[in-house]
Picture 1 (cartoon, helix red, strand yellow):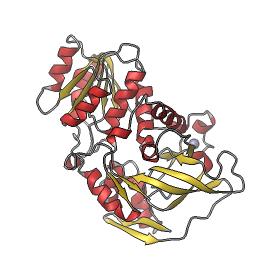
Picture 2: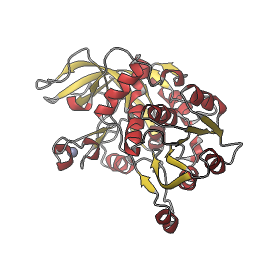
Picture 3: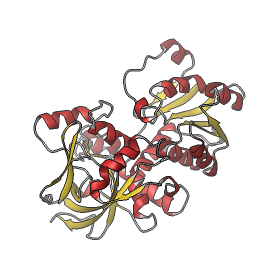
Picture 4: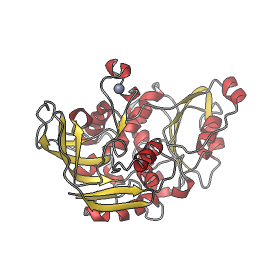
Amino acid sequence: MKAWRLRDFGDHRLVEVPIPELEDRDVLIKVKVVQASVTDTEVLKGKAVALTSSSIGKRLAEGKPVQRGHEYCGEVVETGKGVTLLHIGDRVASPAAVYCGSCRMCLLGRHSECLSPRHLGGDILGAFAEYLSLPEWAAVRIPDGPTDNEVAALQPLSSCIGSVRSAGIEMGDAVVVLGQGAMGLGILQVAKLAGAGRLIAVARRTENLDLSKKYGASSMINAKQTNVVEEVRRLTESSGADVVFDAAGGSTEHGLSGLETIRQAFKMVRPGGKVIQSAVLTGSLELDTVFMKRNKINYINPLTGTSKFLELAAFWVARGRVQVGPQITHVLHGLEKLPEAIEITENKAKYSATNPAQVVL
Ligand SMILES: [Zn+2]
């Protein structure tokens, strides 16, 4: 089969490799659609942004294969002897982290807090290939409803659901979502379903704010033209928002805000409110501990997307209660087009993309 393998940071090659062999509880999945996350694009270049990049560096040093890709839609084409949950022909997607199933947290049913998770595209060979093999509990059956392209975008949406769940939104809460890329638009729609009252979308691109409005934002703030902290305070009668999500932070090279938006978040949340760091940030953040303590700010690193959230993401997309389809604007054909898709994902503003570019196999 053909697969994109990372030989070293910056050295990503399309190679011919054997189709993976299955253990008893593994399934073989034929990839139908795959997209590169922003994290993928950074890991490929060796930027130390990703939580997984140090373990990937270790794998490369040990000469072990690295095959990225965790946002995909696939079909089960073969099952191991002990597989009971999935069947040949099932359409599947996966959470980014595969829980171990045997640690204390897993035994308590808290899979997203697994003590020894393995990452798809890191410790496990990912979906930048024609086939991948996974333990059956790492693949979630996706019923008819969402298109294959939408299914490939469900994993990030499942993380949005994790973020909103961690925020514990109360009915009527004033909620701010900083950043209206794929993550921010997902969080916005899920926060609305969770009972948000005033729902404030903040972005630098007007075309994204148009989508925010369509998806139910009550106020749209263009961060290029407006002092966001002052505007949020004005919209919340000076008290500040109950909940602020940072979905804009991350590498400034890729048009993200660095640490700027998380700092703004602390200034626009009300005393006792919650700041949710949904974005993958880089570097160290200095906190004014007196300010944080005095204002009783809850700084939350949220749950990530579990299998349960992935199922819920599929259920909502199938019924139109959350939309990912309109964000998918760049679809390429053929696994060899992956570098082009990565280029678009790395420079979304330049290409007027919101969702990562997809590759159909
Ligand atoms: Zn575990």
